[in-house]
Image 1 (cartoon, rainbow, N blue to C red):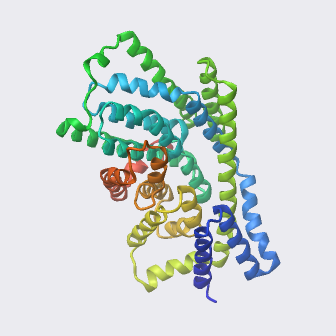
Image 2: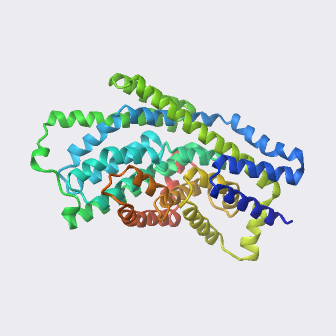
Image 3: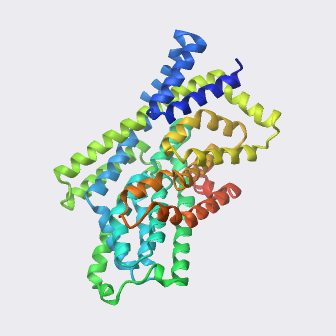
Length: 440
């Protein structure tokens, strides 16, 4: 059997196992280990095992539980609630102001947590009821929350970009900085769209009534200070890291400790908050570790086959496809996979093939990490089975049906596609900041 056929059998077997409901790490790890034994006998098991052991020596892996703990502390201690109150008071007088404020909330939540699920949960439980109560259009605000929560995997400290960095062996700091400008650009696109829509049709997002605008200056400043707290925590973590004063792991520890201290000083670090934060951190960290272990083992078998070179020759020499055509096909495959897989699963399934192939095609792996992340955001919101669509359905009130959720994401997906196109055409959108800071 040719190496190309072995690679196809490995991928197809893994996909069949995933469709049967097997856990992602179980399907990936089993296929990798089984393929190793079939190809090289009992000793073939040592190939994925040796690759997996690299994870135990991967010091930056310690950042994952730190960032996840930081996000859950800020969420469970209701510090995120203060953010929305700040936006409510400062942006309420503007048509569509609360929806614009929700996008701002999502950006800050992204900077606190790095996971899109956390942003979705906070948006659906805090922002959505307030928006509906104030007669905002349910279809528009449903799309706002889904689009805003997707920023969590692009704006640093993105956990997904940390995982990509480990698998692609790229610097986490450069990937984070590469995600800043595209993430803020996408947020700005959402805000401009909301503002224009609500200017054209004020019924979609009416301004706050006069009586709710009468808030004292002292109260406004108090809320502003409360809303600035997450930014201070974020700065205490990122500034030392970007300036080279601390390592990535040290910065993540600073962020986790700063969030914990802030919750204690505000009197919100109860036993329940601490237990919930620790349990959630442990559960998600273990899930990520098992998936990465399986991905590294699978990737080692794939590299041993030389399948990447074979597939590259198939595309470029036999099918005569240009590197850009291959890249676009890769992005389309992410959107298809996003109908039934989450971002981590998509990354670890295709990383053994896509990452080395992108490198051999001559593209920058830092830039490609941003493309992957934006495409994952689009996949999260693409019907019929986008991950965010069903998260929203589970959290939304009964008056918002699945049909409303599908309709709500259309303009935001179009804006995301536009953002992806701009980053592909103008790579400096992603690469300017890391090149400026690191002097590449």
